[in-house]
Length: 259
Image 1 (cartoon, rainbow, N blue to C red):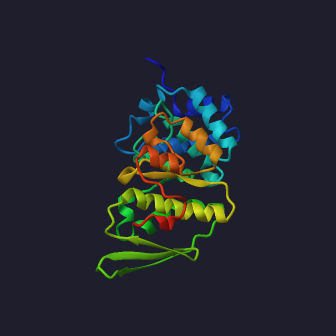
Image 2: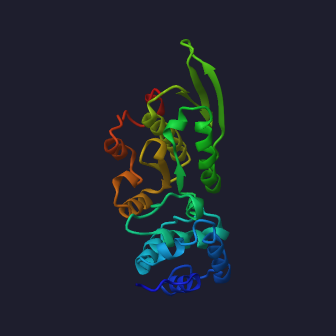
């Protein structure tokens, strides 16, 4: 059986391999010990670290860091988040676990955002996604001013009338076209990122209640997608995502999607 590194040994080895060169190692050790001491997760350290290809994992995240991947992560948490990514990196790639319990700290890298497309067609669903997205866009300096009202149409069906930065959109709350609800949402915010001349875009992952997006530059998207073997879990360009999940694509205008 392979020897399992202690948390202190793990941090030292990551540094020897060129990662987190200026980190506060005592603070990181305490933070990792606290995170892996959560009730019900006592064996996670041993189970995850014993099969880790640490040199490859450090190489991967060094490359990601060089692309600016962690630039929107809170500076005081960046080294911890990077270490956590290394711990959880395996043959299934990035974000490969359930993202609950201690591994949920990965979400504070500000790149991965859950997008439940079914919830988008329920009251509060769009706003819930926006709140989580703004954790990233606020760090980017991107203003997102959102207003909404809910009303009934001529057939008595409830619809959202909303605006994002003064641009108006409509969602039908009883729509069952969940994939188009996700696509329309992504197009709305990609339009804002483009108008503000930022290189990042939202790239969708999967669909339905398991859906998510990643906020990436094209370079980061190619690198991240190359590290995830299962196409169902890759962040994909929109037209490719539509082909994989058999979602009709009508172009980049959000109002082309009647959901």
